[in-house]
Length: 255
Image (cartoon, rainbow, N blue to C red; front, side):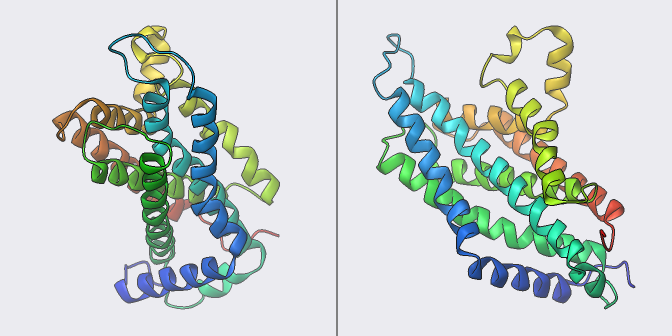
């Protein structure tokens, strides 16, 4: 088995994953419909909540951040379970007896789900801004970009988590370990500067923190800021690191 990257094998893997996704209608609905539906629920909850003068509406503030959180969570779940099925069914073992390397496999998965994430982000942002009236100060293209990068982070962490799971139930169990702490400490529930000092340090080490900060920058600035680009770079770097760790820990088969 080779360990070098092959663009053709990576592309072939991405194509195979996309074909599998296209035949799984429930997963497609989860990817494209669920984030918009959940955002609509938040809109109904906060549509009549009064806000202070000069402050953004609660839905505009929280809904914008959830445009990055929802893709992260959904992609984590879908990817971790999909890769686990590849192992338990023996598909992964058969694939790795071919010239396909682990990096090719994981980059192919990342590319396929990255394309799915891009479509998901476009659909969700379009619905949020047209149907729910979400108001964003910055360009919507930047919101889509951040949502896609955050979704790819979810894909990478899902692939990494799947390497340590022996069943779909165990894969789902990783969600409260990996996802919820990032959600609690990202600055959505409580401003990060109000957290205890040691929790601020933990928050600084979590990639979702930077995705949220990037979206907050787009929400209050009409143009891209240096902080936003730095945050996007951190999230992208964390995704690449997670993919590298996933490649190093991936097992051929789970009995």
